[in-house]
Image 1 (cartoon, rainbow, N blue to C red):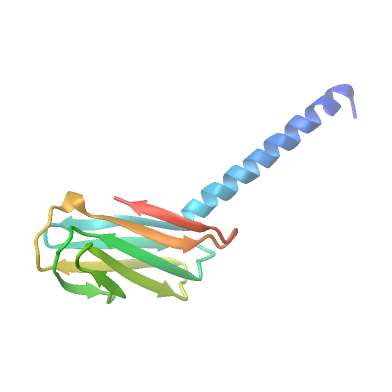
Image 2: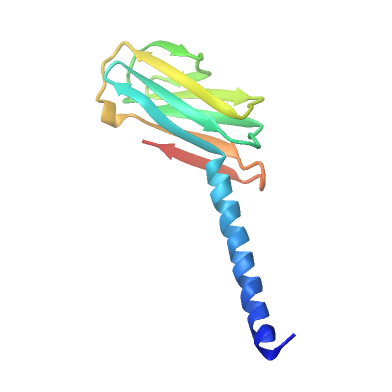
Length: 134
């Protein structure tokens, strides 16, 4: 190895290490993505995309204005805290693909007040991830 190569070797090693760390972080954030397909005063449709490897389980928390009355949910929610306006779904045994949540409301709301969170463990690191959807 030349003197020039000896000087560049540590720099190349550090660069590769930083790229691997960066790729791991962006991969973890890309395991689950979500977006609202519709968001109106009387309903919303939230679409989640699960990429491989899928996490073992996933919690979706939909934030609505406190006191909002729900007409229907598909799939059915696991828990609804009427006082806080938080709706929760628990999904297990996920497979890569798309998952759609539809919520119809009895109480009209301001659509811009709607937001959601996705919580799951990163399949690679086991670290809890929270993904915010606005």
